[in-house]
Length: 347
Image (cartoon, rainbow, N blue to C red; front, side, top):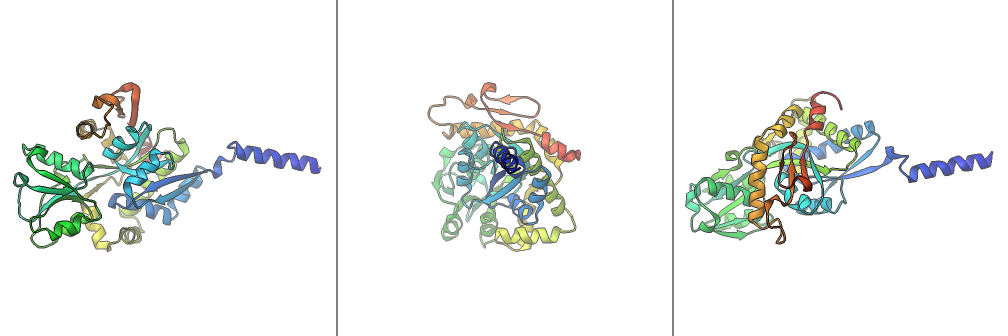
């Protein structure tokens, strides 16, 4: 009898060791502070992530990484199964780093969260010959590039001054001739200061700066479904659910602002509260046009690396099967399937 019991225990240990206890596997997911990603913190605190993890017999460990770029680097190094990031960063860091990644959730796009502020100029043309502070090679840089091209200008018409996001707000305000490109909440804080002009923002290029939850393409189906299910349950709470006030208060505190301040940030964030809307956005042909802008900018700024002679080096695939770049080297995939499953109530 003892021998039989020992055999059962041994078998149980072997099953656990080789994945038989997949129900207990833990999947770490990274996020960093940003208006459109604060819902992840609420989903964790409110037990929504645990609920969906339990449904698919997995554990999801949400980890806040205070350094945004570092969170993506860690994802690229496969320390995390998923990470919140923008469409441009998904291309230039994991995809170009050779990591096959999937944009699982399209959470929102910047609709005024990123902008150009000045002390003296009132239009983009006024930037000619001036010094502009920004975090170079960031989405702020992309926004500036698009603003210039829309006004018949190029970067050669001005001087860029690389400035960290930790300092850009104070440096801008202390400069009588200040010009800066930045994002919320920094943008909102400085734009409210006396004598500051907001001359261009991301509402002029809607749908181009996109906030995502990106996962490794080979992540298990259970994890993908649990993340999508948890996200859209959280969206339903935010969008008029019984606990909407509680949710917004939690997110505001997490973001270091008041509820009114957080609502102001949400006002310039085009959230996809309904999964069907996000899935439709993923299928819209405009997404490919946006990613053409993004990959062209990234290639021209040297983000593809010195060894890559063409922006077609990496492939970007879309729900209709079309691909930008090398079809045999697809490393960034926009996938509408799980968002559509949420919309159809099939998760």
